[in-house]
Image (cartoon, rainbow over all chains, first blue to last red; front, side, top):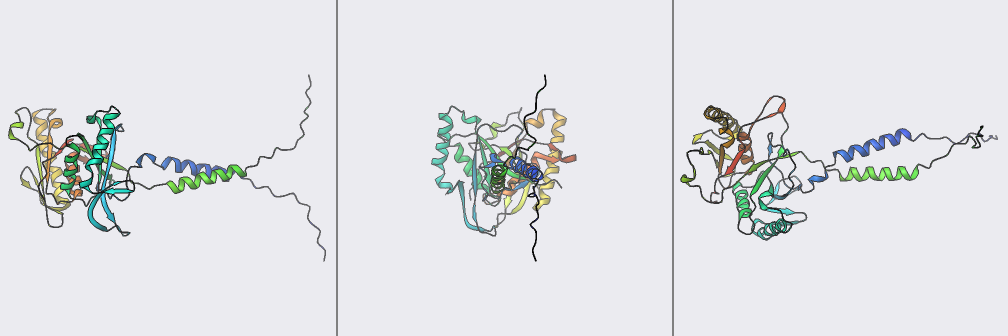
Amino acid sequence: MKFKPANVAPAELDMTPMIDIVFQLITFFMVINKFDQDEADERVFLPRDSLAKPPAVQRKDAFVLNFGFIRNVDKSIADNTPYLFFGDERITMEQVRPRLRQESQFYQTIGTKLEDVTVEIRADADIKSGMIQELIQMCQEKDIEFQRFALKATQAAVP
Amino acid sequence: MKIRNRVSGSKIQLDMTPMIDVVFQLMIFFMCTLKVIEPEGDFDISMPLGAPSAAAVTEAELPPFKVRMEADGNGDLQALYFNGTNLGSGDQAFARLNSEVFRAITALQAIGPDQQEKQEVEIDPDYALHYRNIINAIGACSGRLGQNGIPVRYISKIKFAPRREP
């Protein structure tokens, strides 16, 4: 049996709704992406508090110390020694002094007064309190001399 | 003057393929770089350099409220004291601390309107106490959540006592 080829014009797909949705998706992801929290280390499990609010005015001069544990996949602590995380590098508290000195010198070099610099401490909820005090004391030592400190916490949901 | 429309009626076909390619690439980029991070806040804290001296408290300045926190062997809160009064342990202790601080600042407001702003809290934890308890204590001293989740501030000047030895 012989079929006649149908002489139909090629079907045109209307792409407009798809492009609309895709643009909306891009806008959504751009808005919810917070690039300014890049210094927050995911290995640190912060304590929670409902009154922990971000500062009303963004701090101009602040540097973050991430202080936490190496954890297993199930989030249990793998190594009881807490570490300070600087990107891929991790150091113990005994080794942090040169790093703090370096930060302090950096701010002095660019002409920022050390009393205007806030040290934001992102510490794990399971770290010993005495270690946090020790870290703050280290930051206040001669040749480092930071004066302002802020303790970070995750904002707990309002019941 | 009559202008002839010389353009024939055929539609201009825009090739959308490169744009859609780029748009999809952008979407994949934003999806992959998306980090689900919970919102973070913070508390300002100070730490005196030297050991506290009784002479440092003048008549004009009120002595700080003292929050002493004792740890058990696991680093959990064993006892919480506010100006020497034992408030117990666990979450209830922080709720009691919040009430005690409120009572104390109400008394301060009776002395003078600016006394509350000047008042300090000194947190004195055991070395081994888990840090989450410090944040809970700071939260309890800082204030409470009022209606519609708006915070009511109690005390903003919070400092650590000198570190205790492990």
